[in-house]
Image (cartoon, rainbow over all chains, first blue to last red; front, top):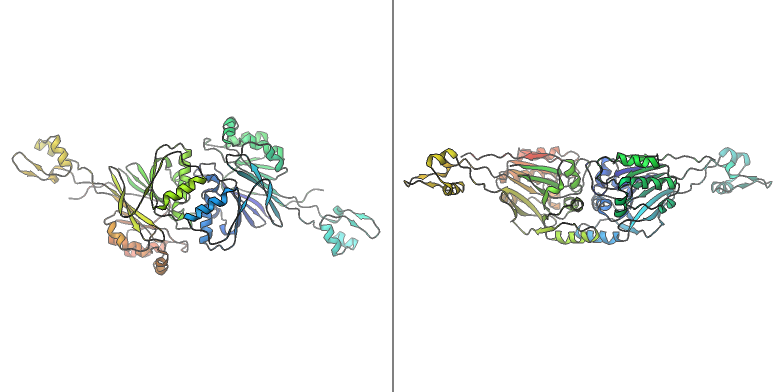
Length: 307
Length: 307
């Protein structure tokens, strides 16, 4: 029942010796979701102990090199290590055509590749536990953020209450869905009395790259963990607007408006030798702000709601 | 008067957490020559303290991902850091077309890019100090090795001898070129008496990827430093032949036949957890064999010949 984010790369367009280009890895119940794939992602995966073969879904925000140049090597290595199962890649429209051209010059992978084109705010992936929604962002090319949110789980029944009321399998199915129970005497037993409080739906939003857009907050309301790009310092707000990037303070404002629990900022311009002051600027608006670092992990515990 | 090789990446097709894909950097008299450019080369350059902006010539052996996927990020970053001067790239014919297609989907660099197509054994680059020769190799796609060799330098005159014989500027020019001096009395003063012994011409050969081919040795006779791929152990000779790669022992045989001074082997298959035994196999044939390691440097001293 894990929900754990690992930052594989945290640089902006120019990598440094400490920061590889953009790549995040989200583990949800032992399934791995890769978000962006900057140059060297396959190396970072190995360095931090992850097996690339276990990745089946890759979400690409946009076709700028620092978010996608690692895809070529990752796909190539997956083929060389005998992958047979489908790799699903989600991203903007040009992704498929770009990869087709690339494969013309390099080896076509010996496993199926399924490209899913994102078009707007929509669910692009779901399984029993999780749904992933794409969010259009405003950048210099077609760009999408991604929100990963656990689905509502079946409720856990209080076994002693089931026994007390002598309830059967058919009743339990309904109770697990959240229905109240009507006793034989017509009395209503509220669902909350028969079940444990539900688990909180854990969530993670990846927002990179984008100009400051308050509308993003509406689409990620109540998110637990938010990564929001902060290419620039508050002092360089004008530059951020011109290049369609965000500042530290703007990232914090999105987090505050969305009611996020935790904010991670990264994608810092290399003009700042130490991005510490960007984090401080953001913390003044949103105290729970952290600096993205390659290899850092954020684990969200499984918790029940308080009724 | 440096002649120094730094290995930036030493893996074969699959990088590991210790070995990045193929990339070598040769510094000759403060000029930098990049040979192959596997994924993450720009990161390795920064990690080992080299400024990518100082590279003006890149030699690509062949269009397999582990030798070329770093080119996209390197070119992109050069553009972002304000490069204006031409970048020269040498390699097989398809390189230009492949890059053109790539630039259609990603940013075209804001500086001139000049592609030089290698066609056979020929001088592909030369300046006052150095010449670079391409050597066709036998691999699964059009592949070239590269030999970097210092040119013959002008001889240094023995000043005391010039004074002793009362020689003028016109004489000195001829003497520096290696000519003997005819004294006024018709007596021949041998050039060796008037000059210091010439400097040895330092050389480096990069041979990757290739099946074992004794003809390579003929084209790199007397090379000081040889990198030769050794994807496989001697025990897997059959596999090497099938995949058009070489074994440790075959690399050593090329070094021995060529009369090389030092051999570096690398590009080891990840099937060998420790490539130590490949080096031992090679050393049995050619004792001066070293294992390629990311970050390792080999500096060739400037030495005069012994007359």
